[in-house]
Image 1 (cartoon, helix red, strand yellow):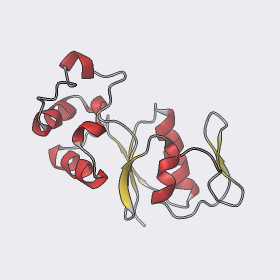
Image 2 (tube, helix red, strand yellow; image 1 turned 90 degrees about the vertical axis):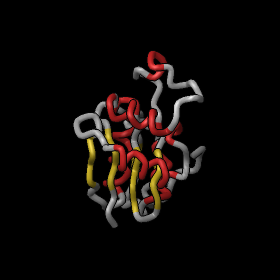
Image 3 (tube, one colour; image 1 turned 120 degrees about the vertical axis):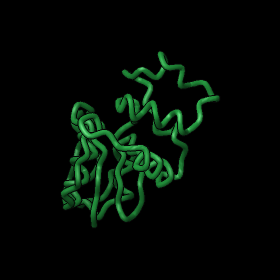
Image 4 (cartoon, one colour; image 1 turned 180 degrees about the vertical axis):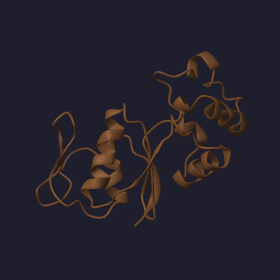
Length: 142
């Protein structure tokens, strides 16, 4: 299975998702989208593959979202894509692409539905258990 992650190594959620992918036995293609921003076609493809709107892939916190007035519903997808291309930090992360689907994985546990079974226990960086020693998701909100 080929897996790709649009990743920001400074983001704890993104690091947890990357670790969960590796815990499933996959070595993903890691796209550090702040260094190598996706182009227009890739952004359109990601939005379509997630089954959501482009707006669902916008990040507000720590970005120029408010300064640009992106909450205005008059912004078209084409204009939003232009903004993301100019300001890649506007892309929410992590986005994971697998043969089983594409998803914005916030919270990090959402990635489990896209992966092969986990190969062992896993806890997030903050110590919260996600996967037990049997490789199964730990019960709790997902």
